[in-house]
Image (cartoon, rainbow, N blue to C red; front, side):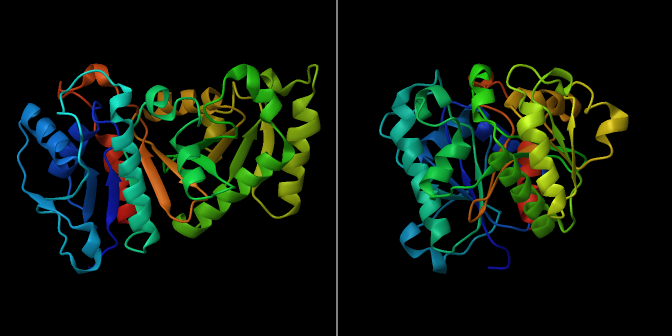
Length: 320
């Protein structure tokens, strides 16, 4: 096996993921073998709906070390789907199937078969059921990972929210010096290990214009965190006002902008790059990436979805 395989969990059956997967493998060739974890019946249903034809190579997971992989076929680990699959609304009927898919992926990664994983989108409402803020937290729990960061990566500019999928009225309570320092170090180390350079990192304030209001988070928490990071040799600066840091003359000075909450940094990044970004969970014992989009069930079967984010995700792993 010349290249480390990329494990791909298809995720929610009623999503656009398989459509963009088909478009991806039709558009570009990769040196790393792709191994899809998905129901054979769900896969065939999407192939029929989208008129996509390709041979399927079903893999026996009890004998992973002796399998022959190439991308001439879809290398499939078949996860049985109890119900007869049909394209429609997302429901909790898919939960056990999705859970088993993730468990298989994590098991074979733990075995040493691969250190590269991509997952398709899931529904936070039906699958996570408010137990986890997102798949970042779900996989971190499954792998006993304490320190983690969500990096939305683009080679020109990446962002990281200190808090992830958290209601805005709870953000201030979750911001502290330790978590800012922790996530900054994780991201800096990730860049040095996989991208082989020390990133320039900007850190935003929490409040508008970084002004101190009743709780004085910017003065009391964020500034001391930045000072400590600088003292230990990290290339960081701030806090910057979130409403101006993304202006062209400001953002081009940095590789990463770390913000205090989800929409503070993801909104501007998606406006700048649209689908040209990938979601990397930094801190896991392997590289986990997801394309930066949700299930988008209203576009299911329409063959109009953009595969760029998945192409970027596989390309990133193909080079590492």
